Structure formats: structure tokens, C-alpha cells
Amino acid sequence: MVKSKVICVLLMVAMNFGCVSNMNKISNTEHEKGIFERVTGTWGWKDNEDLNCINRPAEFVFGPNDKTFRIQGEKPRLMHDGTTREYVDYEIVSSSDNSITMKMENETRKNKKGELTLWKLVLVSDNQFFWEKTGEPDHQWGPIIRCN
Figure 1 (cartoon, rainbow, N blue to C red):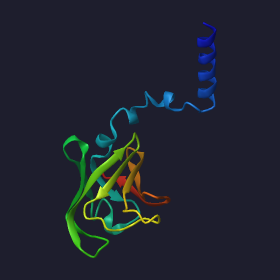
Figure 2 (figure 1 turned 90 degrees about the vertical axis):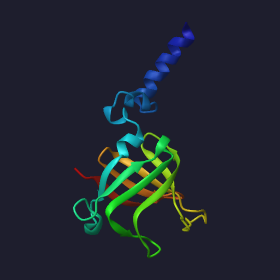
Figure 3 (figure 1 turned 60 degrees about the horizontal axis):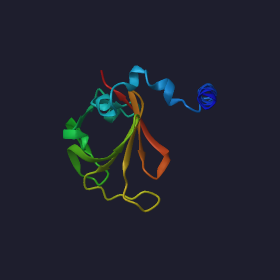
Figure 4 (figure 1 turned 180 degrees about the horizontal axis):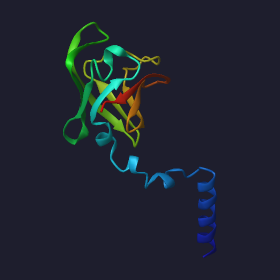
């Protein structure tokens, strides 16, 4: 009986100081949908006129069982290697409540650690995210915003 009261008091103190912040987020409606459902849709770069929602919106689509991810658009995109593609496919490596880590098909670039680049989509809200390279979390690309 005494142990359970002590545990309850410790949990209440931890919640007040933010140590157990996930307990307060369970009922947050923004997180009731899974990450894949929240990311599915049309997106564009906020500060890049060539890739924004008006000039070149991109549709984000997940494959069966959320194992693959495709970014596709009406117009081909210029890629890092100089080629153009109508779509880019990714293999999902891992996910959390607010991020998806993935490997781009035919990726050859390496991060600062010399490892094959993995891309992390970090959802800030249901309407905005940033891209990160794994191994380089201090460098972000974006923001990318949901197109309405």
C-alpha cells in the first residue's frame, strides 16, 4: 500500500516537471492518427518557388503495410545526380509518432559519418515537416507544408 502511494506521488511530480510528458499527449487528437495517415497527402516547399504547392506540389503515398513510400508529382523533378524523375521511391526503415526514417531508392550519397544517407521526415505538426539526413540532425531542409 505504501509503495503504490509513493509511486503515484512520484508519477505526479514527474508529470508536473515534464519528465513523463507522453502521458499528457495520449489524448492529443493530432497524434490519434498514425504517422503514415498524417503524412499522406499533397505537400510543397514553403520557401522554394520551384517546389511550392502552386508550381510543383508533391503527392505522398505509402505502399502496402507502410513498407514503402513514394513522392510523385505532375511534373518531373531534378534530382541530386542531374537526372529527372516523375517519382521517387523510398523503403521505410523505421518510424515513430512524429518521424519516418527511409532509404531512397538508388541512393549513393553518404552522410558525414561515411554511412549511406537515410532520410528522416520529421513532422512538426499535421501541416508542416522538415527533412533531415541521418547522422546530421543539426541540418534540416524545409519547411515543407501541406497543400490545401
